[in-house]
Amino acid sequence: MLLTIIDIHSPLVTLAINIASFLLLLALVMCFLRIALGPTLADRVVALDVLNILAVAYCALLAIASGQPVYLDAAIALALVAFLVSVAFARFIEKSGSRTVTNSHGEHNDN
Image (cartoon, rainbow, N blue to C red; front, side):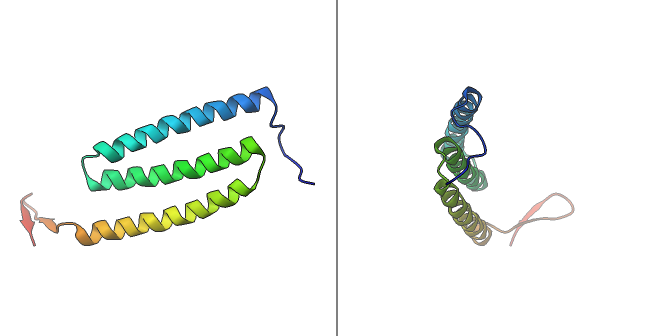
């Protein structure tokens, strides 16, 4: 039989889960706004990375709220995939970015 560390039906834990889910939802909305309105590609990539972290946090919160440890497995798998996506986007930005060099006088020279 699976032993639980905390009592999920406690009012304090229920309140903490509700507050955490609201804050995660607020952070998700802000990330979607940054992805849609981000002035640069780097801002959008960082917002996407934060979005992946928030998805992992939501899976962990769901595991606590439901008492099912299978959501932690999903969180670990999502974290691994999110890391690979972040590395792929970083390489894409590195390869597709323009090569601008600034000399000692502050002037830009395009190579």
